Length: 256
Image (cartoon, rainbow, N blue to C red; front, side, top):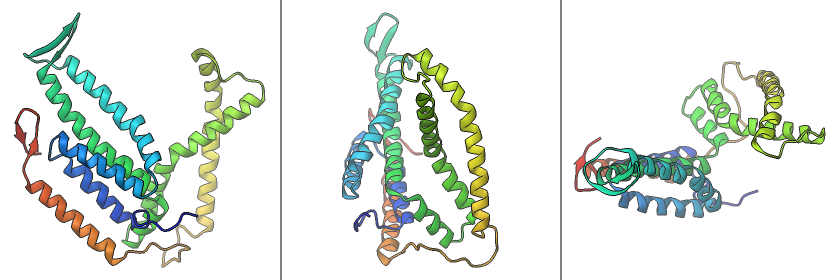
């Protein structure tokens, strides 16, 4: 059981507002503002006790994507001001400028998304959305979509362990791994179909499709602090939007 924590105990809708504010406001300014936001997000993750998980996922996804995009933009975007050239490759000032702008947006929006993944509890989010009138069918689609990759990953691990227990080689070069991978696809698909049927039966047993008011085992509090924070985030977002256009490297500015 996790103890009380101000960040984790916020209403999931409030947490989504926070991530939305960070993601959208990062589009209005240059890399310096986004750098500050990243430091703030790491601090928020640390306050929630998720710093290690957040930074690990951030480095493996958003930072890696940004590095690849930066290199591709810098090397292959056309321009007149050549900064460095080797063989068929050349780095141009225009490519650097566009790479910085694009990677700034990727870092801002992507890091906010990673923070949301680590902060928002999907179960609580579903309850909060249903309290606001969202259809249970829609919330079930959300839960299924979020959980499909982790569930299939766990099933794949179980199947691969079963293959190894039968003496099948699964850990060697790429060709051996490919040879062991394809026989697992059939059991994985069949297992997923059976699981879907089992979930449907379980939902019907819990009166999922029955109309009328239903009771819940867990409730999600929506405190005055949550409501005040959501208003603050929206005001801050409006202020950020009104503060000017997107500031690009080189002094150029432009709106969305």
